[in-house]
Image 1 (spheres, each protein chain N blue to C red):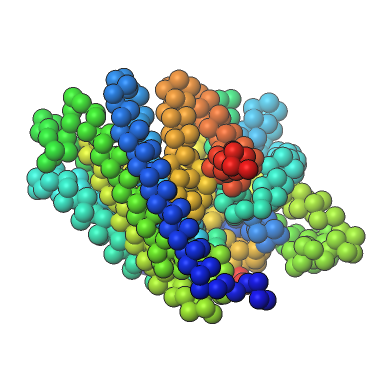
Image 2: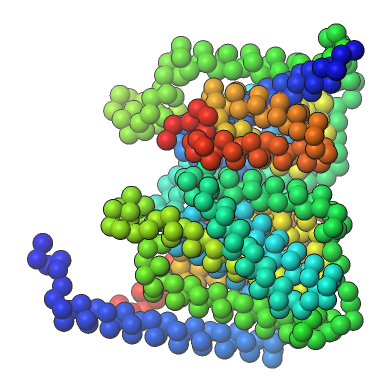
Length: 339
Length: 293
């Protein structure tokens, strides 16, 4: 047993080496963000810019999903609800009352976070598949209600007015680059939030809740409050992403922002890249989103289902072949170098 | 005509549809109970069974009622193949096996949808001139379509058969034992893999039978699975994952509540009733009506 206890000096050196690693992680991240920020210098094609924007957006949304799903272990398949709240709040405030989307983003986020807390009280009593299916059903109720809500445009949705370009309206009809930096900004924020949570007491609590809730509880971890907090953070950023998407696309309807497919698209990059890791969602999105877009434009146009065949087949293969995510490939290579 | 007539009408059609929902859901529940795997391609199994019925009808011009055993056999083979080709590998995952199973079967679902679109086109199909199609029974002012009556009867008979299979046969006992303790059954000489494969075959065969029934009175298209899949998940969770009797009870409740909802809400919102009921029940009993945790 004696080998397991660390002296004060050893504890200090472990702590300082962790701090060292985290400083290095920040530097690495800043370098990556700077490289990505420079991409518009070489990418002039509007189609490719579009793909980049969607990739960054889904990286941010999947990172938000990862906060609850990956770190806290609560597999939500209903995040489309929060995405939809963000998209609808932002659109309705802007289109109906000319309120700047910036306020809509924040308000949608807060509303989603409050709803996540309210729904969390009953939902977090459910375990495993019961929890996941309850999240699907709740999101589906939301979808049905919006579908029949005339004030919000019902099935027709909401069209953003054209011709008011600028940073206060978040409308850029001629130039997609501002959207690129907004999406990058959103991803950077979610990355740093995840990073700081990972190193904080909450981060340790959440992982303990994920790995063994009973043991965590016996050690004094507030299991229920941990889940609620993770759900609120996750919902907030998912809704902000939804508001961004609405401004970017300029048109929303219930099925295009709240369908079950979206909920899966938020989870999928994290699962593909590496669930419960800092870079997993980004790696997963960088593979998945360009692939989806390319398949859609080259194989999906005719509606013959070829894009679905390739896409579904790949999702299945990756899930089976690399269950701990693509990121583990990089880590293997990294380990190979250092030894 | 009494004022109770519309109520009885709704109750009767809800009951018939509920029995069909139970039949759709029971295969999902059976597989879950056996090995803790939620099949996210369950709706696509149903869709394939409907297309199989349609295709066989097209080739042979026989009635879907006659074709049902053939569809069931095809789906049984498909279920075993999916277990052997996909699920067996998904279960080997050491890290987050739950997510691997979700996304392996979800990928399979998309793949099957794509294949259906590729081979059958996205067009809506229906089987014309069947023995039961379009015919209704008049029970003292309450009208019930014959296809639904047939579906309800098939469902009840299937549940009885399933009960007998599990309680009276060696296969049923092996199934029950494997679900109790996967490790211990190996010690008494039961091949776990074989039971799992047969379980998937049986689960797919059951949803196949439901597909052969639905094909008589429902439009067939590549996305038809999604419509019923969510109802099936709700039914299974409401009854309790893994509980076969729970699936029957929950299916009936779901059918009746859905029908009753149309009395007070517009038809587009008919699912809101069952979803709300499901959430209400789950918050009181987190493992469903008849589930065990």
